[in-house]
Length: 308
Image (cartoon, rainbow, N blue to C red; front, side, top):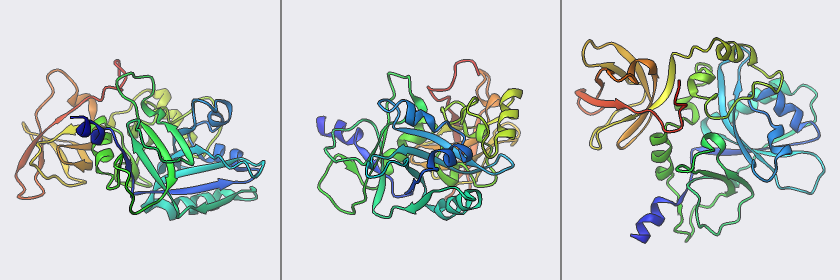
C-alpha cells in the first residue's frame, strides 16, 4: 500500500513541454508587456511564488501559447533571469512571437535542450531543481496541491519517485480540469477566459497594458463566458478522440468539443451553463473505435468558483 501511494504521488517528467530561458536587462519589462499575468509577483514575493501560470496572446486577444514562468536562480549576472515552460510543439511559434515584439529590448532568448519540466503532487524526490515551486493555478485549497519544477532532462535514472512517461500527471490534470498545450488551447483560436485563465490565477487585471489585453478585459467586464474547458468522466474501456463533438442524447445538439484525453477522462470546451444544471441533459461522444455512442458526464472541477 505504501508503494502504491508513493507511485500515485510521484512527480512526472513532461516530455511534451520544453524550456526556454530569457535573460537581460529588459527581461522583466519585456515579459510584462507580452504576458497576461504580472511578472512582478515573482520579483516581489520570492518565497511563495517561484512559478506562475500565464498566456501569450495575439494582438486580437487569441491564445498563442500557455506558459509557466519561473524565477531563475542564476546569480552570475545582475540582470533578471527567467525560465519558461511551453508546449514543445509551440516552441518555434513562441520564439517567433517574441522576436516580433522584441524590437530593441535587451534580452537573450534560448532553448534549453538539457532542461525539462517535472510536475505533480509534492514529492519526496531528492533531485536538485533549478527552479520551481507550488503550482499557483489552484492555490488556496487544502485538498489539492501541485508542484512544478525545472530540472535536468535525463532519459534514464533510478529515481522511482519520477514517472518518466508523464501519464500520471496527464491523467491528474485532466481529472482536475487543467488545460495545457496546443490541444487544449489551440493557437490563434482559443480565447483566454474560455481556457479558465481568470479562474486559474493566470491574468492580472491591474498590471497595465499587454499584448491582447483589450479583448480579454472587455470579455471579463462583460461577465459572459459561455464556453469553458471542463473535465468529462468517460468509461474506462472507451476510446474517444480529440476534436470529437460532445452532443446531447435527446436531440444530438452539439454542446462541446473534446480536447485532451486519457483513460477514463477527457477535457472539453463546453457550453458549461447547459451541462452544470441540476437537470442537465445526458451527453455522448462517438467512439474512436466503432463510431458508437459513448456516454460521458460533465464534471464541475473542485476549484471552480461556487457561484459562477
